[in-house]
Image (tube, rainbow, N blue to C red; front, top):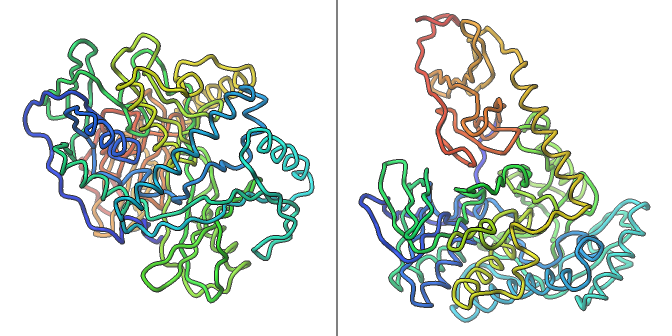
Length: 509
């Protein structure tokens, strides 16, 4: 099994911001060092606030470091759905907010002369299926109604048997870490504070709000923004019932073909997302897709093989250069949650649920939260309000998602493990020891690592992700490394980690 690595992370310098070692008092604490957190921090320090970013790992290494990095307001086929679900006015606000986020990024890059491979180009959604043509016609009509000026394409730039496609002009793509590292450096130059390897495990509402790290260090803040992908604290809002965690995959290949000027995504499943990326003088083709709920789906290698086969069918591929996966959270009505944590929270804000569109979604969140904190309101706050009314169309998704969680909880408890501890190197699986289930992984050095595979969030049983070497939760998306350390929330506590001696495949007390 190949180890995965993100091109964005591999092609940029490692950050070395300190961890928090002593108690801190600030105006605004921002939990999470991705695009939403860093952009919010920069906007708010420019308003005169004392701001600190608190990141559990290293900044820009989560979703923002594993994205496809498309900057677009064309979020697949969404505008006809938004009109039917929220009405014309709110659908128009969604498009306007994401267009403003796109403009913000492009203006920021140009004004600050940020070297992040920004390219302005069209974006396309396409279909290969006849039964999608009517959906494209409705989407085109919806986009025209909202003033988004789409273009229907009868011909296509890639050698597909395309039935229909819609073009959004003047969209963009870039290198997300180069962009965000520049924003982080500007934030620090203005007196901002960044603390890495600083995990928040508790939040006490009040005046001030008190956050506690896993090392028992206290942060007092007047306001808090949770921009940590999944909220670091949800009070009584129960975000885990309203967010669906999904994993998707991406490969970067070199090919003999010239890639056309544009970004592409299929409307139907299996999803296929395509774009180019220039690596110095060389062109890479990025192909993504193969989404499934976290902790479910087929063996990880199956998904990478599917993307490679797709690439070889379409291009003359020289070799695969990179492969990586990412996790996205999708709300039950497809609109992100941006605003006050819940209706009773005055000084705690949240930004989450960007789906597959975090570049514009996270930037829009930062602009909105700046306006809500500084001006007292945002013109888009009702649409994105985290405590908004669940529409009738979303109730079905809410019920299905929580029934699925219950199913996974029961299924995991009944799943039997293997009693054989004679694992190959770089192999992980569920095993049984003295009638109890454990997650076992033998690393490349031959050391065996055992963890309790009951998720510390709400008790679901974890599944092994062979490509990432992680234990993933099929209920709410928590992820742990093979030593039980948290990679992704909502879990706040690590797994129990055991060191057991093994001789000839047999456990030795």
